[in-house]
Length: 157
Image (cartoon, rainbow, N blue to C red; front, top):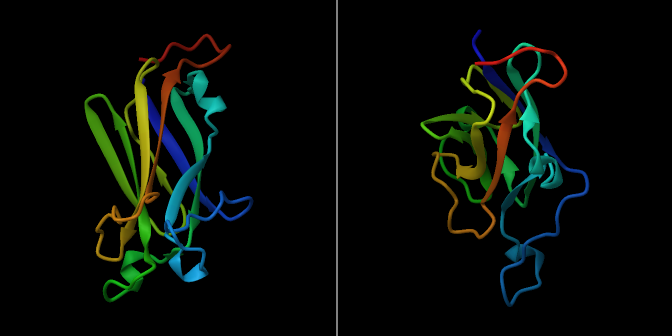
């Protein structure tokens, strides 16, 4: 039986974290773009996240983006300040999966097994796929372990 991961990604706008202000400034024009993974919460990641009875890990990830206009790379003709998209990268010990997103998307068919550690990293990108690493909060990272299906009697590879 093949195990895989399905990640559903959403951008959210409710209850955003506080705006990030450039040091020494308090004007709206100096707000930096930022990205934060807001779900799952840190408390949820303390325990392994169980696969379902089909040996698939289904995980919703919510991303909050501040001070940045999300636009699909295909809808632009070049770089524009304050505009772009985000990439999501999922890494397990010996392999990596990357997806490009404007608003939402799904990563699937990632081979996973119970006990593996997964790192998920979201990062803001310019319209030309350059990371916006000049800003302090351009990326967010979560880590968790994959758990076996709960109470099903199914053993995943």
